[in-house]
Amino acid sequence: MKKLTKKINVTVEKTKTGYSAYAEDMAVFSTAKDITSLYENLIDALNLEYEESGYFVDAKNIKLNLDLKQFFQYYRVLNANFLAQRIGMNPTLLSQYVQGRKNPSAKQTDKIIQGIHTIGKELSDIRFV
Image (cartoon, rainbow, N blue to C red; front, side, top):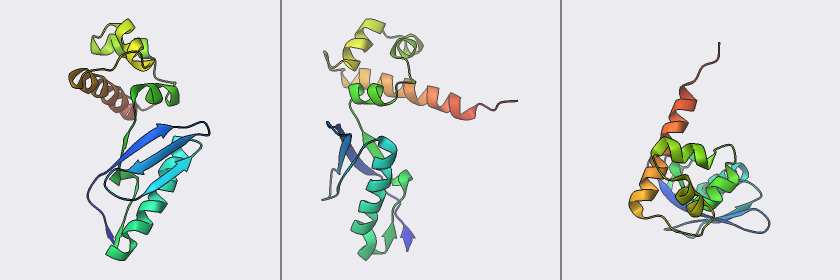
C-alpha cells in the first residue's frame, strides 16, 4: 500500500457526548469523546475508505477544521488573553470570538491561526536541560 499524499478536510463539531467529525468530500464520519480518540477513529474510517484504492492514511493527512470556541474549550492550556497580546489583538475582541458572540473575519481568523501556529512551533522547539 502507498501512503496517501493529499490532505483531507475534516469538520469537527462538539456534541453532548464528545465530538463528531466528517470528511467534507467523502462519506466518512466518526465520533469520539475527545480529539485524540477522534483522530484515531478518523484514521480507521479513512483507511477503510481508501483500502480498495491501495492507499493508507495517517494523522498527517487529516486537516481538522474547528471553530474558535471549540478550539479554546478543548485546548484550555492556551490562554486567550496571552494569545491576544502575542498577535496584537484586543483581548476583549478575541474573547468575544472564543465565546461565539462575534464571528471573526477571514483576516482575523488567519491572524489567530498564525499566532497559534507560531506558539506551537516555539513549544515544539523547546528542549529542557
